[in-house]
Image (cartoon, rainbow over the protein chains, first blue to last red):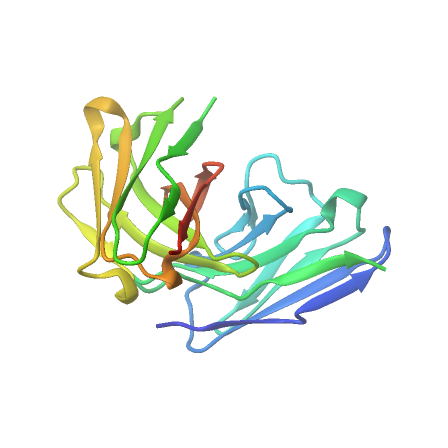
Length: 108
Length: 116
């Protein structure tokens, strides 16, 4: 099982600031099999980024993903009020797909 | 519009059984793997099971193997999850998701509560 560890657990920022969320895998993961999801309270998760750095349909350009091997990053260049949510990283490199424990992005 | 709608959740006693359904619309259901993902109250996401387009290949997380069975009916554009021997640890919102490798479409979820 590939364990994904996200940091920080909670990130407190203000609108307009830059957010950097990290995810570390317990073993190397191919870039083609790494993604990020956003989940707002009471809603289902939504795919944000796939294949490490590709934005899913309808996702604004302020969201970007990067990384390789065991270290991956989600960056939100300038936070909008609607971006405050929980973010999960995800790998499908192994047949047992796993998620990180989540980073809560909250308004400071 | 691509849509997934789950149903069948509810309150069940420990050791009991439940069958979840997911109705798909807006896409060619038989072209996709499909998955179930769950989220315990206040917790993160856990992939539970998936099933290949023709229903012949299925995979499960270890914690549900032998207790849960995923199936599909492509003629009815429907996905199912049969859950047996339920325990408190199975209490969660269960989402069905279109599995294109990543989960690119999700239903709204159905809550399963295991309690006496």
